[in-house]
Length: 210
Picture 1 (cartoon, rainbow, N blue to C red):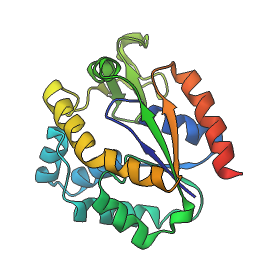
Picture 2 (tube, rainbow, N blue to C red):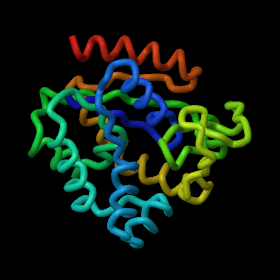
Picture 3 (cartoon, rainbow, N blue to C red):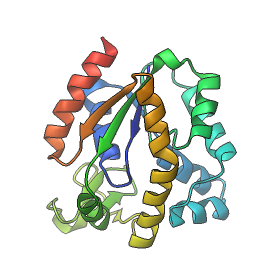
Picture 4 (cartoon, one colour):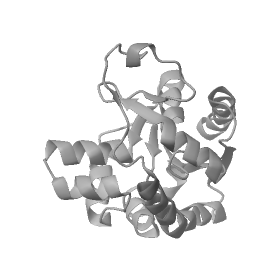
Protein backbone atom coordinates (compact mmCIF):
# COMPACT_ATOMS: atom_id res chain seq x y z
CA UNK A 1 0.00 0.00 0.00
CA UNK A 2 1.26 3.48 -0.94
CA UNK A 3 0.01 6.05 1.57
CA UNK A 4 0.36 9.53 0.07
CA UNK A 5 0.71 12.58 2.33
CA UNK A 6 -0.40 15.83 0.69
CA UNK A 7 -0.84 19.35 2.02
CA UNK A 8 0.60 22.86 1.73
CA UNK A 9 4.24 23.60 2.63
CA UNK A 10 4.85 23.80 6.38
CA UNK A 11 1.69 21.91 7.34
CA UNK A 12 3.64 19.19 9.18
CA UNK A 13 3.72 16.27 6.75
CA UNK A 14 7.40 15.53 7.37
CA UNK A 15 7.01 15.45 11.15
CA UNK A 16 4.03 13.10 10.94
CA UNK A 17 5.79 10.89 8.37
CA UNK A 18 8.64 10.36 10.83
CA UNK A 19 6.19 9.48 13.62
CA UNK A 20 4.43 7.01 11.33
CA UNK A 21 7.74 5.35 10.50
CA UNK A 22 8.66 5.17 14.18
CA UNK A 23 5.37 3.76 15.47
CA UNK A 24 4.14 1.71 12.49
CA UNK A 25 7.49 0.65 10.98
CA UNK A 26 6.41 1.93 7.56
CA UNK A 27 9.11 3.10 5.15
CA UNK A 28 9.04 6.85 4.56
CA UNK A 29 9.90 8.39 1.18
CA UNK A 30 9.93 12.20 1.16
CA UNK A 31 9.81 13.65 -2.35
CA UNK A 32 11.60 16.80 -1.18
CA UNK A 33 14.37 14.87 0.58
CA UNK A 34 14.85 12.54 -2.39
CA UNK A 35 15.16 15.48 -4.79
CA UNK A 36 17.55 17.39 -2.54
CA UNK A 37 19.69 14.26 -2.12
CA UNK A 38 19.68 13.70 -5.89
CA UNK A 39 20.79 17.29 -6.54
CA UNK A 40 23.54 17.03 -3.93
CA UNK A 41 24.91 13.67 -5.07
CA UNK A 42 24.89 14.68 -8.72
CA UNK A 43 26.12 18.22 -8.00
CA UNK A 44 23.16 19.49 -10.02
CA UNK A 45 23.05 23.22 -9.25
CA UNK A 46 20.11 23.87 -11.59
CA UNK A 47 17.85 21.43 -9.72
CA UNK A 48 19.01 22.90 -6.40
CA UNK A 49 18.18 26.45 -7.57
CA UNK A 50 14.67 25.39 -8.56
CA UNK A 51 14.14 23.64 -5.22
CA UNK A 52 15.36 26.70 -3.30
CA UNK A 53 13.04 29.01 -5.26
CA UNK A 54 9.95 26.97 -4.41
CA UNK A 55 9.11 26.30 -8.06
CA UNK A 56 8.19 22.82 -9.31
CA UNK A 57 10.84 20.71 -11.03
CA UNK A 58 10.15 19.23 -14.49
CA UNK A 59 7.79 16.27 -14.10
CA UNK A 60 10.11 13.94 -16.01
CA UNK A 61 12.90 14.44 -13.45
CA UNK A 62 10.67 14.01 -10.41
CA UNK A 63 8.77 11.03 -11.81
CA UNK A 64 11.83 8.90 -12.49
CA UNK A 65 13.39 9.61 -9.09
CA UNK A 66 10.15 8.71 -7.29
CA UNK A 67 9.54 5.59 -9.40
CA UNK A 68 13.06 4.26 -8.87
CA UNK A 69 12.75 4.64 -5.09
CA UNK A 70 9.21 3.24 -4.88
CA UNK A 71 10.22 0.14 -6.82
CA UNK A 72 12.88 -0.61 -4.21
CA UNK A 73 10.19 -0.92 -1.53
CA UNK A 74 8.20 -4.17 -1.50
CA UNK A 75 5.92 -3.35 1.44
CA UNK A 76 3.76 -0.50 2.76
CA UNK A 77 5.30 2.92 2.21
CA UNK A 78 4.60 6.55 3.12
CA UNK A 79 5.03 8.87 0.12
CA UNK A 80 5.39 12.44 1.39
CA UNK A 81 4.74 15.23 -1.12
CA UNK A 82 4.07 13.33 -4.36
CA UNK A 83 2.18 13.48 -6.71
CA UNK A 84 1.91 17.27 -6.86
CA UNK A 85 0.31 17.60 -10.30
CA UNK A 86 -2.14 15.70 -12.48
CA UNK A 87 0.72 14.84 -14.83
CA UNK A 88 2.45 13.13 -11.92
CA UNK A 89 -0.80 11.34 -11.00
CA UNK A 90 -1.00 9.97 -14.54
CA UNK A 91 2.59 8.73 -14.32
CA UNK A 92 2.01 7.15 -10.90
CA UNK A 93 -1.10 5.28 -12.07
CA UNK A 94 0.74 3.98 -15.13
CA UNK A 95 3.22 2.21 -12.86
CA UNK A 96 1.28 1.42 -9.67
CA UNK A 97 -2.20 -0.01 -9.05
CA UNK A 98 -4.78 2.60 -8.03
CA UNK A 99 -6.39 0.22 -5.52
CA UNK A 100 -3.12 0.23 -3.55
CA UNK A 101 -3.12 4.03 -3.10
CA UNK A 102 -4.59 6.13 -0.29
CA UNK A 103 -4.21 9.86 0.40
CA UNK A 104 -3.99 11.64 3.75
CA UNK A 105 -4.70 15.33 3.15
CA UNK A 106 -3.37 17.83 5.72
CA UNK A 107 -4.97 21.28 5.99
CA UNK A 108 -4.58 24.37 8.21
CA UNK A 109 -4.81 28.16 7.89
CA UNK A 110 -2.17 30.44 6.37
CA UNK A 111 -1.25 31.99 9.73
CA UNK A 112 -0.15 28.58 11.03
CA UNK A 113 1.80 27.89 7.85
CA UNK A 114 3.74 31.15 8.13
CA UNK A 115 4.61 30.53 11.78
CA UNK A 116 5.78 26.99 11.08
CA UNK A 117 7.85 27.96 8.06
CA UNK A 118 9.52 30.89 9.82
CA UNK A 119 10.49 28.73 12.80
CA UNK A 120 11.36 25.49 11.03
CA UNK A 121 14.89 24.13 11.39
CA UNK A 122 16.17 20.66 10.71
CA UNK A 123 19.21 18.57 11.54
CA UNK A 124 21.31 18.18 8.42
CA UNK A 125 22.85 15.02 9.90
CA UNK A 126 19.79 12.90 10.78
CA UNK A 127 16.89 14.87 9.24
CA UNK A 128 14.97 15.52 12.48
CA UNK A 129 12.67 18.57 12.27
CA UNK A 130 12.19 21.25 14.95
CA UNK A 131 10.60 24.67 15.36
CA UNK A 132 12.77 27.26 17.10
CA UNK A 133 9.68 28.96 18.54
CA UNK A 134 8.15 25.85 20.13
CA UNK A 135 11.05 23.44 20.77
CA UNK A 136 13.56 24.04 23.55
CA UNK A 137 16.97 23.17 22.12
CA UNK A 138 20.10 22.95 24.27
CA UNK A 139 23.01 24.78 22.61
CA UNK A 140 21.39 24.25 19.21
CA UNK A 141 21.99 20.51 19.47
CA UNK A 142 19.76 17.95 17.78
CA UNK A 143 17.87 16.08 20.52
CA UNK A 144 17.84 12.89 18.45
CA UNK A 145 21.48 12.55 17.36
CA UNK A 146 23.27 15.15 19.48
CA UNK A 147 24.95 16.86 16.53
CA UNK A 148 25.23 20.64 16.23
CA UNK A 149 24.00 20.65 12.65
CA UNK A 150 20.70 22.52 12.88
CA UNK A 151 19.83 24.92 10.08
CA UNK A 152 16.89 26.37 8.17
CA UNK A 153 16.13 25.06 4.70
CA UNK A 154 17.09 27.36 1.84
CA UNK A 155 13.48 27.38 0.61
CA UNK A 156 12.02 28.38 4.00
CA UNK A 157 11.57 32.08 3.28
CA UNK A 158 8.56 34.26 2.46
CA UNK A 159 9.25 34.57 -1.28
CA UNK A 160 9.72 30.83 -1.67
CA UNK A 161 6.69 30.13 0.55
CA UNK A 162 4.43 32.26 -1.66
CA UNK A 163 5.77 30.48 -4.76
CA UNK A 164 5.17 27.10 -3.16
CA UNK A 165 1.66 28.03 -2.00
CA UNK A 166 0.80 29.27 -5.50
CA UNK A 167 2.14 26.04 -7.02
CA UNK A 168 0.19 24.02 -4.45
CA UNK A 169 -3.08 25.83 -5.23
CA UNK A 170 -2.64 25.59 -8.98
CA UNK A 171 -1.20 22.09 -9.29
CA UNK A 172 -1.82 20.01 -6.16
CA UNK A 173 -5.37 20.93 -5.16
CA UNK A 174 -6.66 19.31 -8.40
CA UNK A 175 -4.74 16.15 -7.40
CA UNK A 176 -6.54 16.02 -4.05
CA UNK A 177 -9.87 16.63 -5.79
CA UNK A 178 -9.17 13.76 -8.21
CA UNK A 179 -8.44 11.29 -5.43
CA UNK A 180 -11.44 12.59 -3.46
CA UNK A 181 -13.73 11.77 -6.38
CA UNK A 182 -12.61 8.13 -6.25
CA UNK A 183 -12.98 7.99 -2.45
CA UNK A 184 -9.27 7.79 -1.66
CA UNK A 185 -8.84 10.86 0.59
CA UNK A 186 -8.73 11.10 4.39
CA UNK A 187 -8.69 14.68 5.72
CA UNK A 188 -6.64 15.76 8.74
CA UNK A 189 -6.87 19.14 10.50
CA UNK A 190 -3.18 19.83 11.11
CA UNK A 191 -3.82 22.91 13.27
CA UNK A 192 -3.74 20.86 16.48
CA UNK A 193 -0.69 19.80 18.48
CA UNK A 194 1.58 17.18 16.91
CA UNK A 195 0.47 14.44 19.32
CA UNK A 196 -3.24 15.05 18.66
CA UNK A 197 -2.72 15.06 14.89
CA UNK A 198 -0.79 11.81 15.12
CA UNK A 199 -3.59 10.14 17.10
CA UNK A 200 -6.02 10.98 14.29
CA UNK A 201 -3.57 9.73 11.67
CA UNK A 202 -3.12 6.49 13.62
CA UNK A 203 -6.87 5.86 13.42
CA UNK A 204 -6.80 6.45 9.67
CA UNK A 205 -3.80 4.15 9.17
CA UNK A 206 -5.48 1.33 11.05
CA UNK A 207 -8.44 1.68 8.69
CA UNK A 208 -6.26 1.79 5.57
CA UNK A 209 -4.07 -1.15 6.58
CA UNK A 210 -6.83 -3.39 7.98
